[in-house]
Length: 277
Image (tube, rainbow, N blue to C red; front, top):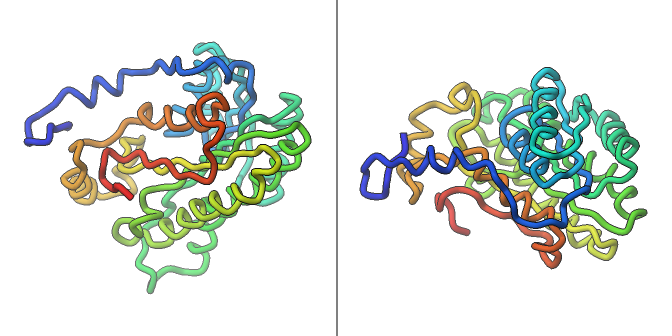
């Protein structure tokens, strides 16, 4: 349910959710992009948004390739080109092979979106086994490092590019209950973004990130208790969850050389005002 600031029911949420047109700039048409974790959720919405810009999109999936194929079909229907690639991005070698496959298919890689990630499992630190630490850090942190490292030589040789990673509001506030490891892994993503931006700016490679807040994603209730979502919404000035589509504009902005050519090392917060750093 969506509410206005004075507590009344609102139709704003469904209106925003219906928006699926991102006619922002023409400079992305024909550009190539690899989006990790794009078979569902924010990654899938970003893939569709890039498709609407007539881009060439490498849709990545791992456990559910049927969904990845569906997203690729939606990219094509939106006006773009699409291929589908499979890889377990928790594995460093697989990340290198994934990036190389996208570059081989397209002949270049203009944009890398490091979106693969997830909460994995909530656990208080005192009960967290080493295996859970390894899984969360491999999925959320090492995948960003490995894919970015693999993409850099291609981008340097072609004269530039853009890397956009998905971090989280949790990177700033430590996360919700029993999600310290997830928050810490996203803290790595935010810091890695700023540091890498300094390192590769001389190669005309821009590095930025998007930090979604409380977003209405598929199966969200399976990982986040309803009372935690409600508490977050009460503290959000907009009094509602964001939609997947409302995240897309930030990625389009950061991908566009026309719109953000002098923007690097930044984390764009998309959270309805829940946190204003």
